[in-house]
Amino acid sequence: MEPEPKTGPQNDQPSSQEPAHHVAGAYRLLIALSEKFGLEKHPELQEAITKLELALAQLNINTGGMF
Image 1 (cartoon, rainbow, N blue to C red):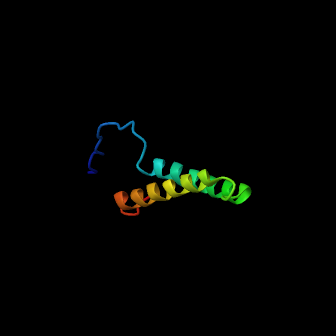
Image 2 (image 1 turned 90 degrees about the vertical axis):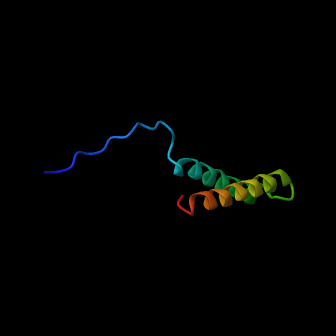
């Protein structure tokens, strides 16, 4: 006899990996823009890239590298 599948409460929140993928995608986009337009002319791109790098590092720490 097979055990009945356990049904837990439905969770409408996105998986922990989904936000990480969005942040990583934004990071890649900013890197591409910085290569296209140059960081010298647009230092705000470098600031945004740095902030995303910090966010990605924190996600890596918080998830144990599981994103």
